[in-house]
Length: 320
Image 1: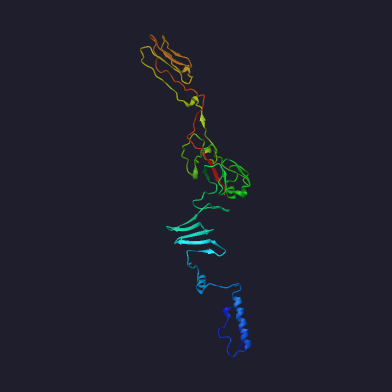
Image 2: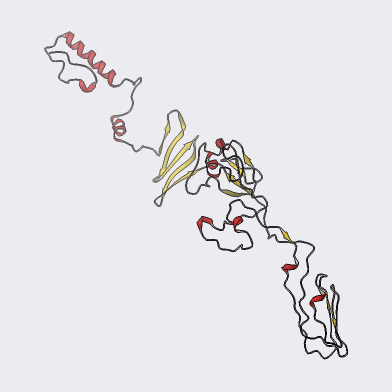
């Protein structure tokens, strides 16, 4: 019969060669079988020790390993193990480096050691780019990309912090193209923006101009203050119905205005003192009449502290 066409194993005809074929035809069939084998397994260069069960498992999908895990052929200390259901350990140099775990319907990824990334890490629980964090060290963290919140300029921000540069531009300084400024939190306490998130201002800081309270990065307030005369209320003592001699004296911060005091009733006027010392006296038939007028407050010469109890910290900003 004619010689069949030899391509791959599936092209071989089990009934060939027939008994009536000559020797030459049989030899041709043998060569054809060898060619079909080579075409079907072109990359097999050694012995295959896998059983039909192993091959069938590979063809059918994932297989259950006989032991708790598998190591890589090139390194017997690296691989994966599953000590229990819902738990897969990543083994590096014989030590569990990380664990993928599912507990209570939630997935967890645990790392035994620090995480270093060449790209952006995002997601719930991760400090977002541009966030400020209190830091109790005088050196920046070694993990990730951080800077001090000290009003400095980040050079080559288009390379080091392209995401934050796109958000902030030149809001805090820099040219907004290749350089970028950062907020300055030195010696200040952060205060929430009055119209945060587009809400109506609460008005708790009414002495401060709204333009400052509504602008990110504004600085306001003072560490101390010296009182002005206008800061103090007026004092208006009252005398009436006195029939016996009265003497009242006193000084308010060294400042009194003599023209604010009423005079006694003639013909016996009362002496009300000078503009620095209040002295109201009545003798004989001299009796203070009505109000003694108003006493304006004085002016303090030294500022007093307005600083609340505080703790010194560092602030750092995540750049990437």
